[in-house]
Length: 496
Image 1 (cartoon, rainbow, N blue to C red):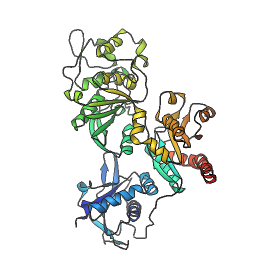
Image 2 (cartoon, rainbow, N blue to C red; image 1 turned 45 degrees about the vertical axis):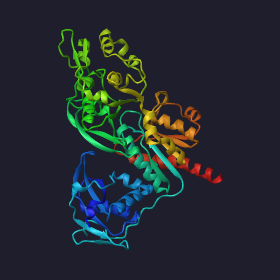
Image 3 (cartoon, helix red, strand yellow; image 1 turned 135 degrees about the vertical axis):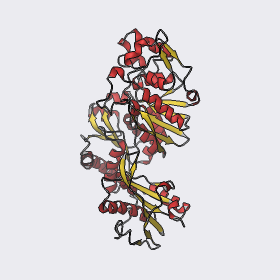
Image 4 (cartoon, rainbow, N blue to C red; image 1 turned 120 degrees about the vertical axis):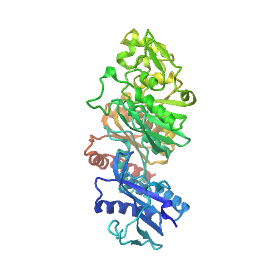
């Protein structure tokens, strides 16, 4: 029997690879094995390696089952154990089956016998705990849905892990769904919510430097990418060009690289892109040629827009016409209403007219004009919030929950007007007749009016979390403010 053909692997990001670190990782891995009733399995330790997705060193534990059916059954059991998976996600492991062969061959460290006893090999004893491991079983009772967007620069996954761990420790059943509006975080929200995976491609970012960018792969051979990866402002360096020379060229390159992978259904999140060239740089990367009045090529950027007098699409990548490009906007602003478009002079307005299309269409101004530019080559504009929430199944998730925690960086009147994901989820609480609370970094509206407008909200909690102490501040806010709301709701259920 070749054990490592059917593994479930767990990748743990670590700072060092000491024996203490190994034991800590194996305690969680073994708890997962016992929770899935894994008997007669092999335990292997893969090499220490570097994860290109998280861009961090990782240590890999592998639990190897005797066959494909056992491996699949164990994986399904693990994913059904809410409390267990919440704790595992706190350490960001990647639990997966049948795709770790590239790390082999693995030295066997131990075996779990039919009585559930760990029998370590002599060489493996130093790396795994031999004391009895108490399995973490599924929490029962009150069900909590945690649905955050990013918060003060902290990713939605990180926020939900901390809240989810605190909730699981109080014996609540936890489900986590990251949400997004069509900007940063869209790829991770859709991959996690739809059971997808990641691929990486090398593209040019807003600084003109090549870096690895994520492509989310969803069921149905569908890809999702973020314009902010290639034209965002979160990676500014001393080499970052001034605004008048910035280009969205990397966005077009990212689209081409995704088509190179073979995908013909591509969702593009336009939000949070720091594009100021009306998206012409992206079109240039896709093969569109821009020329001046004398027929000379013009490299598009804000500084050169007045020079552009002609647009030539004859060399547009022919795959674009065969690709379904869905342009997800996080704001329905149109290009003619976008900041600066109305008073930037006739030159830029001439450039807009050369592209054709409808500059007044909702979302055409998203990404600094990326929506308009990509729509001019066949892309279809679509509200990001609506599409993302539907794809991750937020509606059924709310109906199955007893309490919903909605998270966002900032919540104000604009959040409601622009249809941000947090506002949309909050509105759906009333439709599903489910209570919840709003958990935000900053609140920009009157809380009393908010509670009146959204009657299913039990309260609003603000948390001034920062990068170093976000876990402490979030946990404190959960215990101090959210838990009492949940407690009241449990009491109401008991009375009913």
